[in-house]
Length: 139
Image (tube, rainbow, N blue to C red; front, top):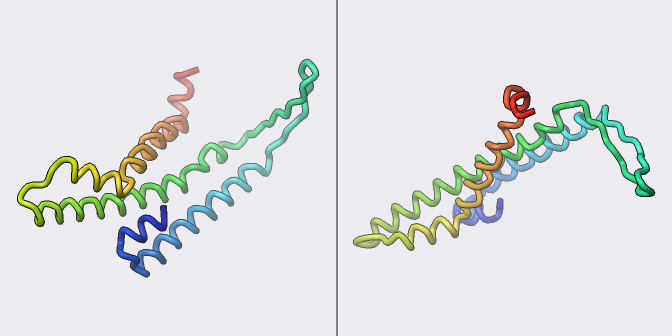
């Protein structure tokens, strides 16, 4: 996705550096959160009907929040892609007497905005599971 957004911004070096720094920061943060979250993790081997299974116990809620740095990356990428889509739609309106819905839809598909919108929607559902009020009511 970094390459695609970099290409949408006509190969800007500033954009490439920005994307690289943000992606690296989010990736390192996720790795550190995973490491810290798994420090107190324990597992035991259980044999059920001749099948060996590993049951893990994770008492830390940090493992449930690991997707948050990924959310930050995806939201930034969504806004950058949306900005380009808006620029393309404005250019379509200026170049033609009337732009068609098909042209706008093509721009949206080419810029992967629908992917980002879907990711943000799913992440909003995941954020809801972090709420203790929602967890208590659903049990």
